[in-house]
Structures are given as C-alpha cells and as structure tokens.
Amino acid sequence: MKRYYFLILTFLAGCAAPSVFEVPTAYQKSEAYPYVDKAWKALAAHEYDKAYQYADQCLSMYEGEARMLNTRCGELGTDKNHSGCALLNDVAQCVIIQAEVYFMETEYEAGQFKCQDIDDFYFNSYILDPKGWPWKPTEYCAERLKELDL
View (cartoon, rainbow, N blue to C red):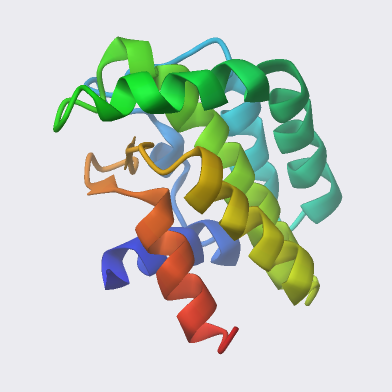
C-alpha cells in the first residue's frame, strides 16, 4: 500500500525525474491518455487548476463510456491491463487526480466524493505506475482517506 502513496507523493512533490512520465511498454493507452499525462504533469508542477481542468476535460468526454466498461473489465479477472480496459483505467486516473487536487487544496469533502466515485463506478480499474507496478484506485483511495483521517 505504501508504494501507491509513494507514487502520488513523487508526483506531488515534483521530485520525479522527467523519465517518470514515460509509459511502460506494457501499459495500454487509450484516447484519453493525453489528458491523463497532462494532468499528472500539472499536478507534479503544483499547477492544481490546470491538473483539474485536464482531468475534467477527460471526464467530460469519456466518463460515460468508462463507467460502462467497468463491468466488462471486471469480467476479465486478472487481465485488467487488457487494451479493452485502457479507457476505464485512464479515466479512473483522472478521478484520482481530481481527488488529489481537492486534498491538496484542503477541500476534503470534495476529495472524499471523488474517492466515492472510484468505489462506485471505477472499482475494476487497474493502473500501472511509470515503473510498471500495478495499483488499484479503490485501494489507493481507502489508504489516502485513512491517512487523512477522513
């Protein structure tokens, strides 16, 4: 669990090398990925408004489709990095980014709401960090809320 938090801290602290943003070759990218990439980079640079806006653009275009994919991707079992699930995984990252923006701006209730969205609509998402380590947004949210005593 601590490695999930470490990943986010690395992005937030802005102390990651530029290569941190390279995508592992095993990672399946969706059409939403450019927004995810820009949002993570803005978050790392502490440009919270930009990070939120990039994530919001992604959600406004792909949220509905990603929510429908959640059930199908759950049926894939352990193969959640399957190319058919890439959109779900990328959209879930945008929700996580928005939650982190809220937490960084001490808007804890709004951040909790975003984490609840992960639990409700993206519970089958599965993400590889830039070094290839898998993590689940639902587990990350649970740990983050516990850490913040929320």
